[in-house]
Image (cartoon, rainbow, N blue to C red):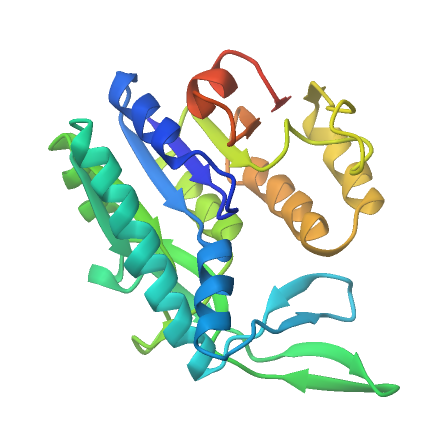
Length: 263
């Protein structure tokens, strides 16, 4: 089994991803991002996306009820259904599911994010949380039946409320439960860059031990992503490929060794 995490950037080649899914003879679960669509919809609705940076340096989207409505429209609505459409046109029997559908991904709501504002430490509470479990029975039924699950946020909290969550963390829980042979993460870059401003500075390979040092190098959302990668190996991953989602055949290129391979 293969887990493919598709970034939500505007330049990601969704048609190419769907082409590759049609040509790969391996059961796949897709975790689909939609941050560009979310930001566009938020702007059109007059509701700007707001981010928070915790006192430990990790950034996340502040998810009040209005933001959660936009997330539902963007992720489990427009992005998911358009991608499922691309898959169906290519003979891939994709099924779009948000985490709240059949509680396919269940999590624990955050008690609050500690931030610094105006020289004070504040706790911001919203509709966000950490995934803790997946509906493995449903996912196995779909995979064994020849379907391709396409998962998006929101996920369900302990009481069934919809909450925002990080796709990196969802991949970790999927891996810990289902044990994929390989994980492909498609981003808007040729791979992990040693110098974020230089596209040619791709790090071709990293060891699991190197991830912690790399995490200390970066800031913002990339810092969170490096932490998630470390936890992914703690969940039992053997190989992760960070590949370019913008190329003609994103999944195939990653599986053929393009990008950054972490073992």
